[in-house]
Length: 166
Image (cartoon, rainbow, N blue to C red):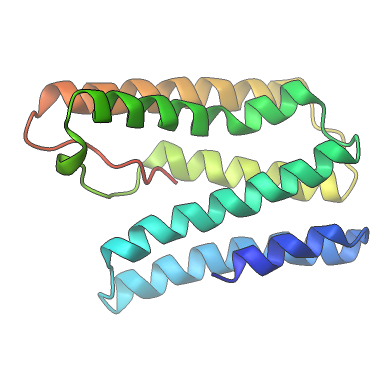
């Protein structure tokens, strides 16, 4: 839940505060998952809430950076491409009536994508230039995530993979 107030810190136009907010967000994302696994306190609500908080943080920060002209539209779309793939997957699962069979687990490529997103936000906050290749990688990862999700639906009709892909 800490990631939501951390996102609000982006309303302050201070490089130091923004960098601290991103680093704290990254740390809380790593620490809460580690502690949940270590002490076996993994819950369905935690599995859902963690990626939602990540997404809210990223969406809010992207909105701020876009409104300030730091992030071009196509770059923002690249940053959100995984979430578009996830939304399409959720639609497919809903239409095919397999939503009740979804098992919430993490996916390796989802974690990689989240890391890249946070890295980009950190670099942009530090006023570094992000080369287009980095954004292209996000599009490619989103495609692989979507294909992996679809493959898992086909291979096991009793169980589908989770939309918790970060």
